[in-house]
Length: 286
Image 1 (cartoon, rainbow, N blue to C red):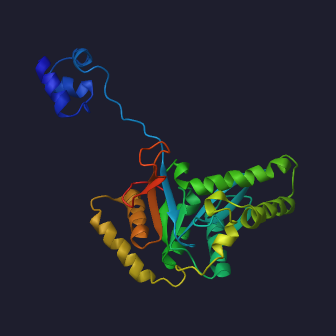
Image 2: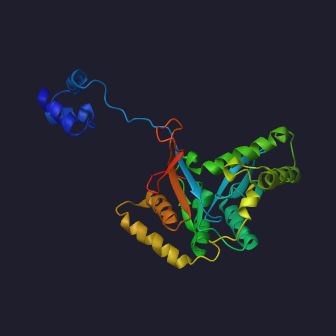
């Protein structure tokens, strides 16, 4: 009996709990627990590794990210960010988070900028998963990129930007600003973040300098061909499905097209003395 418990535990890499083993061996879970405690000690735990995944977009307008963030007086900021340059393409102060506001915002950006991104990233808010916004994406052949539910760290650039604008508003947060006054404060903050603040990750350039340095390769891209390439990648990833398939395929697709790269940062005390080891196969979420 003891040998059978040990054999099952070793054969299945200690992944079975004591109740499953007890059911097969026909003994009590307590007896199984006692045997395993004596033989192997505590159940093995998955090792925790520090997060060193890094990502970079090669060209502007490859991916835009939209999100809502709280403002004083139960108001909300809807903002869209270019992931390459961190340039804030558009923003609005709203009284409610609605799907209609998101579609109007996206339509306005399309008219003002003159083109749309390859990929649009958003969270699982009903405003973004709505039929209306998904229809907008489909009409303009924009690839959707929904981040995993309750995983804001996957949207790190946008979350940091939320924090920056809220920090800008701290001195006036409790001043009871009117809608017009709050909009003026937000506009000033966005102007500062776009055109004045140098960013280390951009080589101490401003977001506007990076965004407007050159014409976007994405603007005149053959979207029919690009989407066909994306579908081929999805077909190869079968039987993966759902949003996990979408995120994995989009990342592989952008790397294949030369629009995006991932790498694993090497600790500074590593024996190689190098700073990074680039790898396009690393499974790192952006």
